[in-house]
Length: 65
Image 1 (cartoon, rainbow, N blue to C red):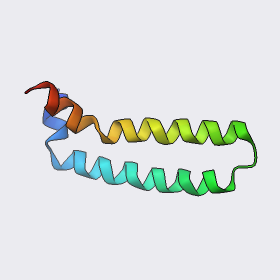
Image 2 (cartoon, rainbow, N blue to C red):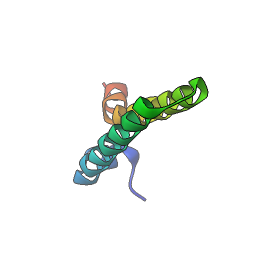
Image 3 (tube, helix red, strand yellow):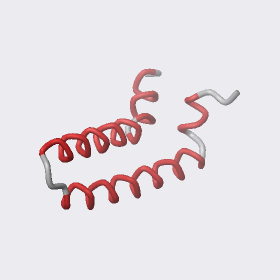
């Protein structure tokens, strides 16, 4: 099993980050078309979660210092 630190230092993580960026772009488009406050909050929560995943590398490397 690959450790999380090994993953965030690999090319696979960079590919994963690109995937996250694409998903965030799609959610921003959905956010622009949202018609209810509930939809806006749900989409904002999804974007927040994806952004947390994007910062995983920095968070892990910061812990090791």
